[in-house]
Length: 292
Length: 340
Image (cartoon, rainbow over all chains, first blue to last red; front, side, top):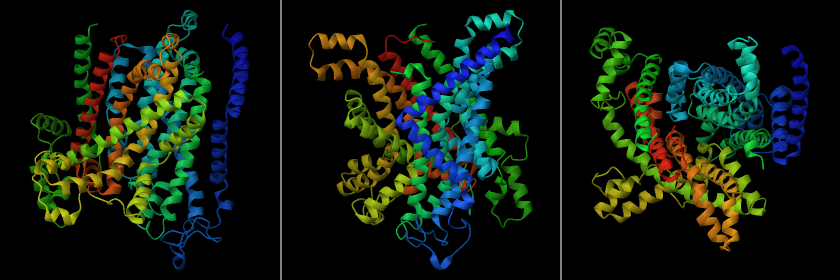
């Protein structure tokens, strides 16, 4: 039965995916979010050929020069071209944000689905642990953890995974609890499917909608937290062109060179905005409760 | 389950959570880099002195002994001594926390009083001009980093226009001239008690920029959330009934729709308080505001563990309590709620 069902399910989900994709493109906000992200992704991939200057090479005679034809966004306190640094920073932000969200949602969904399916004391323990994590104001918890691990780009990412997984675990547990009631789970169990098979093949695929919505909405929040850690000196370290760190440096010069902190901030905002446009649109499409 | 039983269970569940929080803060401060004994002794101190201090501070004992010691001291309200200024952490928190509250309370009310009405406005005029403008504005409000917004506001209103002061709670010149007795640690209240209007006015002016910065994100969230809930409520049958009865549109929206829409919004208020506690780190750093957030940041930079643990614990307890209050209000306001 399993085998006969498989191709059919595959075909219908492919059609559904195509439909979803069409609807994403029809919504102007979602489409513009996607477009912005596409531009950022291109910048991140082809940074070497797109950036007019090397983001790390110092040019002290040209320090803090205002935006001009030579330097479209001006230069920083070491004479480095801000546009080039922003282009190089795009890769850091995009790669870190997406990796953090993927890892966090993966760990969180495994734990959440397992908690909801296994139930009993395991569920109780897992839920208390998520309670503990979610009792902390996120920025504060992230600061404490990243300090314990030693500030740095990788550890900032790791920290945000530690801070974020409980949220996914909660969502996925809730989904699992409602899905377990379904007849196809009972049928699969009667057919002799094991725990893992039921969780991974039957429950997990059916939670994907809410998971994607949650993850997309979290992309923006994660990008902001990541920049905040950089701003506090707990994320990427100098001379990295990470955007939060650039704002932190630019802050000291903002009277003489307002462009220095302003442009990296706009870059962050644009990225988060694009993530949020996408998240909003996907929620409208994938979450039937929000559909109107 | 009755209301009393629901609340009892809800409060009892806080105990394992609080224990877990103490384990987590203890764990993270003890795997952290740096040698606390060396920090207390100073970088120049001889190794023998550091070793002696390590024994005095009990840092040579097994981890679990240290943890139980930590918890038993916590029970007595002893949070240890801050490495930063050699004062008890509890005293430091007492001094810094009111400054954060004095900042967060206006920010909170600002975001509620701006966010909710705008949310109603956008819902009522769905897809209209203001709806589109304000929706994009609210998305932007969420997208801009608070620390960046703070910098821009400083640049504009302090440096360029000179309308508002840039940092701290009070003008330094004024602080040396006018001595205000500390009664509540809230400068606005203390200056009123002392009857010093110049101080009150100055303190108020100092609060504006950081409070507006802190309220930026939450305002946008309140607006978006209220819009969604209002749209849901406006589609309900009882709204049609109210309209059919011939009630004025204003009454329908305010008395029938908004009142019901406010209930779920209360949950967001709990979340907003948590956001402001975390966000205060960033905003206080930008504005040199001597509150809990800046204290947290300073102690993290100095690896002042007792202070880090104290701040984290306090912020978490405040967050938990505000969520508890939110839950209580929620249950009282919404008779349909099921106690589970």
